[in-house]
Image (cartoon, rainbow, N blue to C red; front, side, top):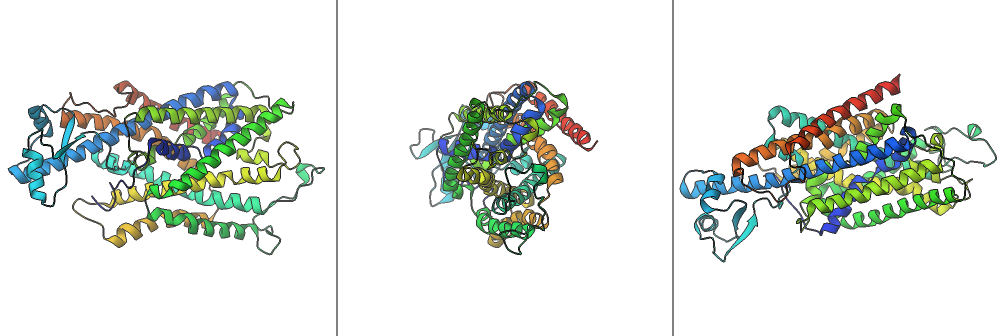
Length: 511
């Protein structure tokens, strides 16, 4: 393989893996959810978010199962090559397993100085050889990115469609993050002076040419200064593995919990003091497509699972751990959104929910320290996700351009691909901070493809190849709880309907 396409890096505990997944999922989508809830109605929102969370969990287990089959396939190819060198001809892994009566396990030799002797022992040594250690055929020990899985299980057309989808999504995500963080910092440090006894309609209307910091520097230039600092601070992470962000992940995870807790407490305080102004409707069908898009984006994690799951040490109860993670996230979303829609009028809920707590004229939310902390919360979430998304895109780009038997030179592997990953989205962010169209394409069409269609097609193809290579009796310990083919077909239909919903939403918005 090329470079570190399957390089795992340092291992971490299941708890650390849950933190990584939690941080990846809970981002800007959570902050746009209260407004979407208020527009669509509390009952429709409750049913839809539970349903979409369930589908996202299902496709997450599909990706994990495909990763395990991909690891088994890599082991099979390695053993096939070893047998060909020793016996002069390849043979079926399924036939060898039937012969040895070993249906689910593969034997891997301990490394020795003499490679040829190791290969002979791997194939010819008796089963009870104490020098051999047994590794389950489906153990997820090598990181196989979604791009590599697509090359294993898809045909050429499917492979190119996958990369079109993943590249649009990941580049779009990085461009959104690169623009949103500096923009948030600019808005916090270049605020407009608001007088409490003046109506909002008469307040100063800010533009990009308005002065900032009390100097001749305008808001647009201030944004670019922050973008440059953002690039210098977070850009270098793309040259390393995701594990290098461990302590950053822990810190920002704590910040997320604190920020969510503060917003929930402040909203509940207003409600209990009789200042809750929200009276949400039960259902509004016209707003469902928008809520659908927000929820799809809010549960997105499938594209980065190989980088996050593979380094987990103990994967025995992986599906249960992921389910617990999704359950915690779902509860957070529900509590945050429901307190928001009953606290604020529907028309007053901001696109970024934290802005509702920066009103210095409100005695409950006027504490300056809390306002600044919540204002910086999007900066925390996006800054943490940026390295993970960038590393995922880098690894997929390596797989896209990789050819069998070719090894990337060091400068290509360690310098060119990281730069190819980071430069385009930063360039887009420098050119404009208005990414409305890009957000729509990224979160809606590409997002639905990555979250629903790609995992379903991957697991369908992986199960088919598993039966061919290892036989119908081979047991995969990482098989999804949704192993029946019905669920795969159902996700295909659901993914198609989601794209239709998003299209209808765009049409209604423009009309």
